[in-house]
Image: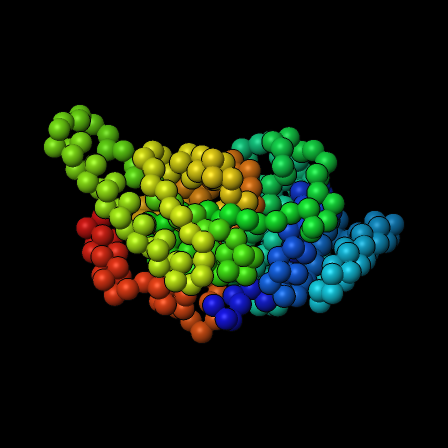
Length: 321
């Protein structure tokens, strides 16, 4: 974990309240992780151009963002483009080889609670790196409650785990963030209830499955501690989206890190149903991990703590699923 996995942050802003909050988190992460920041604003002009007065206003706002970031001694660059916001964000992220994209959830559209805007959907679906999406602190679009990076702090990170490849990729990211931000790590596995007629045999099987996951996550949490991390775990029964959201609230988590697909996901799908359901209702920032960028390839932190026995057990579980 000596090599950071986040050194270049792309902040996509439309200057909305949600984007202002995303900027606050960007400054916090950049300062804590010693990362550089690129700020991007995209004008979605339908007439092929932007009025001079509007352009001057945009440049004024971008200058204020740059000055705010520079006050924290963070390297920052400003980028400006016109076109489809999602496409331009993705293009810029690829061009600059960004490690993470940060953006607000609502934007100027002030979408109703429970909906994902087209830009957020496009970026989380096709992003070349993990995407940190920041919702407003209230369901309705209200003024931002935070005035600067000193007003936010990630103390506890929730990482849902099912030992699938996307799950382990997102866990690797969570480990590095917990280390860099000095945050506690909460591991969560959700055991989905078996539908249909219940009998004693099936009830005993469900109890054994829960016990097995409890032991596995307990073992994994202990191994996290070998990296100097504070780690706990939780095994719940229920539907994955509801259980993840409930755990985040009840455990007081400040950040949720999860893969876009789990064991139920299918390769080639854009965003898994669980991740999308969580995105629609999450009340804390969420880092969705579809295309992780690990230094040196693979998952160095996980390789360090996962024993061969645990890896074999995870492989056997996936084959039997």
